[in-house]
Each structure stands twice: as structure tokens, then as C-alpha cells.
Amino acid sequence: MCILGIETSCDETAVALVEEQKGKVHVRANLVASQIKLHRKTGGVVPEVAAREHVGKLRQLLDELDLAKNPPDAISVTRGPGLLTSLLVGTETARALAWVWGVPVLGINHLEGHIYAAFVSSGRVAWGVGQYVVDEALFQPRFPLLALIVSGGHTELVLMRRHFSYRILGETLDDAAGEAFDKVAKLLGLRYPGGPEIERVSRAGSPSRFSFPRPMQGSRDYNFSFAGLKTAVLYTVQREKSKARNKRFIADVAASFQAAVVDTLVKKTVRAARAFGVRTVVLGGGVAANTALRTSLDSALRALSPTPIFYVPPKAIAVDNALMIALAGLLRHRRGERGRWEDLRVDPSLRLSPAPLL
Ligand code: KG4
Ligand code: ZN
Image (cartoon, rainbow, N blue to C red; front, side, top):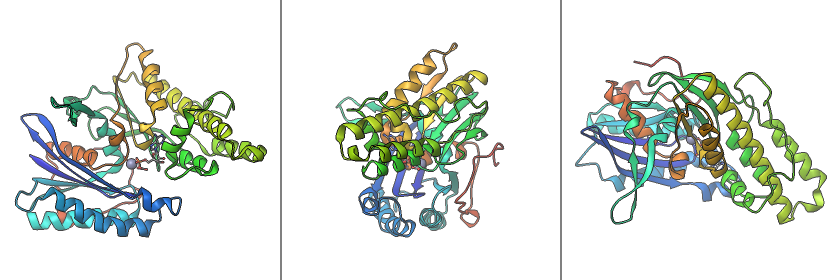
């Protein structure tokens, strides 16, 4: 059973190949062609530019997989949420391949991919080369499962009592966590994408120099808001204009901002984990690559009794990739889903829904 995953929802073109043999999942390939350098010039993603890039890059990556003589059993492709034109490149390619090879094509929610990515870890094989390993818990995680998805476009706390059934407990009311990282980085004169840059300069900074607000910390719901925090950073930078180029100042603002985001995310996640008595917590999305978030959430969850199992993917699998899309497709294929290429549709604002589709 071999699944080809395709991901083109934003600015990373990615393909992956996974194979299930006797209940074990093997990662045969996981390729990502990043467009970061291109989008640095504009300080963000220009949708038309991204889509045009996907066309050339996707072709190259698929050539590398060399599937013509050995097609997969099914194709799994992101159908939303994301940028319309970028999504179309992936889905149209998937439709064409499904037609040529005569195999099913499964349309996957990108956020579902970010959740299931958590079951990937970076194993080591005997000769010391890193290789991704998929935990068997992917098939049967201990439910209820709580997922915190933090990416450039989303911040969602999701409760799952079974596979493919998602109850959104809370989400951001304005900016997504990754978006806040990107915008604050821009304010500080750091380059795109801002998350990794904020994390890098934060290492030399003091997280307690500025006490930025922890938005909605007191609210009883599970929603988030990051726009006010971003504005607080803006005011600080404007007030201390003379220091705007000072390395120490930038490092301290970055570290204090990062601490505020991490604190907010961790507190609400832990509160939800306790309230719903979850047995598993997963962290996913690009911001899950942030070390401060990974370690703080891990230690906060350890303080719970009983302690939920915590899954977080390697950093390269936290950010966009096609391995996560292939895994979600593999799970859906196992339970009998068989999409037809004629029925595959993109949906730029696709949401996680409570009812499994089948
Ligand atoms: O999941 P992702 O790759 O793409 C979307 O689905 O949006 O997430 C990208 C986001 C960007 O906002 C980026 O700045 C953020 O993830 N990000 C990080 C880190 N690495 C990526 N944020 C904080 N710390 C990081 N190390
Ligand atoms: Zn993503």
C-alpha cells in the first residue's frame, strides 16, 4: 500500500511517498522545494508568484520520485485551506495523475495533516543517517486527543474523540500565531519568515525585559487573539525609536514577545487538556518548530496528573511538508475512502469538521 502525498497550499512545494507494510509505515521519500528566498524579496508571499513557482517545482519533485513505472496505490493532496491558485496547482496535478494511473485521489485538509504529522519522529538508522519514523500510535492514538495547531494562517485548539472528527474548542479571533511572529519580525527589521528569525535573535535576549500582554488569558473560552500583543510591540518600538537598530533592544523585544505568545498558548492548551481529561496532546504547524513552545508545553503537561502523552513532530515536519498529507491520506484510505478525480475540489477556507466525511 503506497501513497503519494502532494502539498502546495502556500509557499512550499512538497511531495512524499509513504508505504504501509504489515502495519508499519515507511517513509520512502519526503521532498520540499522551498520558495522562501523568492518571497524574501517581497517580505511575504505573493500568491501569483507562489503558484507559478509551484508549477515548475512540482514537476521537478515528481520527476525525482520517478513513479512512471511504479505508480502509487493512491494520491493524497491538500485541497484547503490555503491560497486558491497554489492549491489548484497541487490538485490539478493530482487529478491528472489519478486519471492517468487509474488510482483514487483523496483531498486532505491541510490542518488535518498538521495534526497527524505529530506521529512522525526522527529516528536514526545504524549508519547514523537520520530518517523519519512513524509511530504506530498514528493508527490508534489514545483518545480524547487535543491538538494545538499553530501556523502562519491558523491557531486552533481541536478536540478529537476519534479519527477525523474535529471539535474546534477555540481559535484566533484575529492574527494567527505565526502571522504575529512574521509581523513582529518585520517591525524589528528581521527577514521573512519571521518565526525562525525571532527565535534566533531571542536566544541573546531577556524574555522579562518587557512585560507584553498575555491576550485573553483571563477569558473562560479557548480563543486566542494576537493583534493586541503585536500592537503593544509596535508601541514599544515606536517609543524607543532611537534604539530600533540596537541589537540588545531587538533581542529583548523578540524574547519578550516570544515569551508572551508561548505563555498564552501553553496556558490555554493545558487548561483544555485538564478540562477535557485528554490522554494525548499533539502540537503541530510551523510555530511548533519553536523550541521555547515545544519545551514549555512539554513541561507544563508533565505537571498534569494523569500526564497526557505529548507528540510533536521534528521541526522539518512541523512546517509545511507532504509527508503529513500522505499520512492523513493513508489513514483515510485504510478506512475505505476512495476519492474520484472527477470529484476533487479545492476550498481555500476549508474548516475541520466534526463529522467524518465518509
Ligand atoms: O505551517 P506553516 O509552515 O505554514 C502554514 O500553514 O501557514 O507555518 C508557517 C509559520 C510562519 O508564520 C513562520 O514564521 C512560523 O510558522 N514558524 C515559526 C518557526 N518556524 C516557522 N514560528 C516560531 N518559531 C519558529 N521556529
Ligand atoms: Zn501549514
